[in-house]
Image (cartoon, rainbow, N blue to C red; front, side):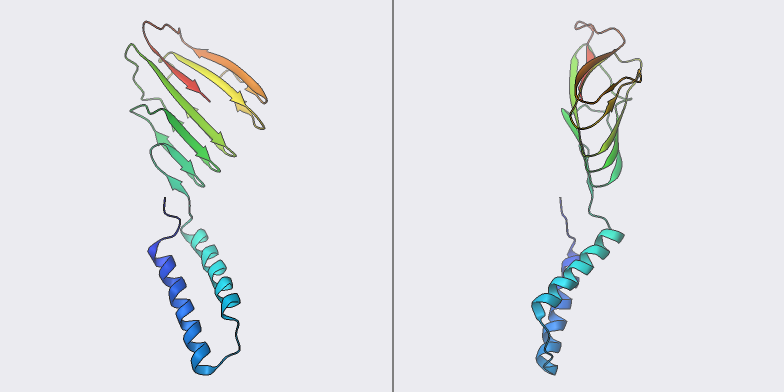
Length: 161
């Protein structure tokens, strides 16, 4: 994950160079360090406003809004300081148990499921609220929720959230 792009670093170096040149040619009595720190903070704010510094890949959403569309199951999905959706509606189950962990840390996360796929949800929460499809919720502690018939011979989707 790259927090700063090449253009951002280039602008910072350009501004620092111009400040140093002006300071040496015109003998300004300017604190270069304080001015540089101020310019960096202003440019960082502009960078966040126009580009953002969030990150999203096939498994994680960090500091932004996004959707993770899942066709091939991976073991873990993360939504951190963000608002995101993990779409599991296209997941196929073939006579095996597929286990997925969905972590939501200081964020709002939603999981979209296919009602035709047998699913076992192991929900746990601390300092947050987790709402299940039957409108029940978990605030502190854990709870299990089943969709369809869970049969180890046929396979099912197991979600730990």
